[in-house]
Image 1: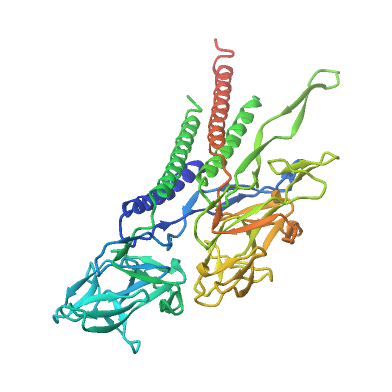
Image 2 (image 1 turned 180 degrees about the vertical axis):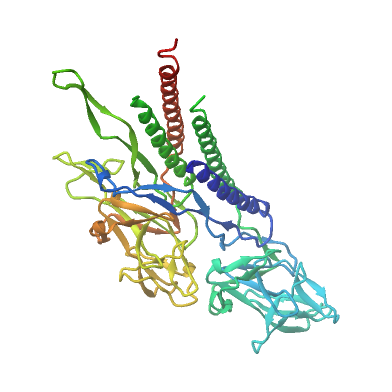
Length: 277
Length: 288
């Protein structure tokens, strides 16, 4: 019957989801390492009302059949991995990535991995009394030693952290006389951003149906990639208020128009009900 | 019998269809590559009324009457939508202004030749193949690479290359590292050709396209000859990092919405008037 009502309701739902997404981006305007989420819309399936041969009259431009659309849906959320601005913080535990790469962190005792752009790390003392470099949430950052073995970044007590632009980590004694190499930060490049899923705390995991090795490419800055690291700096969110506000206005107005269409369809149903007064 | 009662009812149904179509246009205000649809109405076949039952006389002609209207076709308006930047290498937009020798198209994409025939401007489309092997055409160039390395559209349909096969890249290929050249070949960041070339199809009369949902169109079997691969001298450009906005005019949509509603209301009033006439005929004529 009244497909206008169904159509408008479906579309308002889709636009509401897009508004939520924009709100999320705006809320994270100042979150270090945040990547804005994007999604566009896609038309739903359409119904083709059959018309028989007698409908093929002179002056008709289209093939037989009358198409009825059923609204829109929001497409899968993707992450816009473009570079955010780099802000200097002078904190040696703050690392910023320039280029398309992610830090790898370990999120549980079983060695589950997650990936992040947020380089606001800190020194944490673990149960064994070692100083480990972790994210703010306490997830250890993965480094590779000279043999390529992966492990946490353990900092000798009293030493300062040094990271060069190629991701090589070393520890320096307070007087600068002793420098201990600690390996190299593990960086991966996401080849398919849509295979990443944002979980929480600005961490991405690889979707369960895809193989992590296929969508993440190991990179070594300075040799096979133009990715660079900066110590004492943080990458700001890449969400820009002006873009988000423009989208907000467009989606909100479209929502409003759909609501008007719904109200109008409601009036039509009311008119049909009043046929016999 | 009161003939107009059914005429007005047909009018209500036709306006309802028009309203549904406008609502769908409004819903797709922000859908990339969406083409506005207009519901076109047609009057019922003309009938010639005769006065009959006059003794010894030939039936006398009264005149022609159409006893209703119906929504005949849903006509997509295939004019170019605005192209906007998304910054994503996975987005592609077609800008086309295809010409036919000796014909000048107006801004609505049609032209009238010397014999009075209306000719519609050909349009360019990305060519997709759905999972059942059917060919689809779309202007929504929001693609991604799937698990098997295929370039696919939002609904998982394959994007076809000039060899009429789905475009497939080596596993681990990122669209961020691929650039589309002017002749629609994908080259990687080292400048090496990946061997994939995007197939853009030109449809001679875009009105023959039937909507297949998901922003895609198909051609009926008898119209399959209307599509051809793009030629080198066609005025078609594909831009990477851009999408084509929906070509729905929001202000026009609002006006159409109101006019459909009010026309529906007028038809409803007519039915009420007929009802009153019937009421009089049934209950008052011959009342003692």
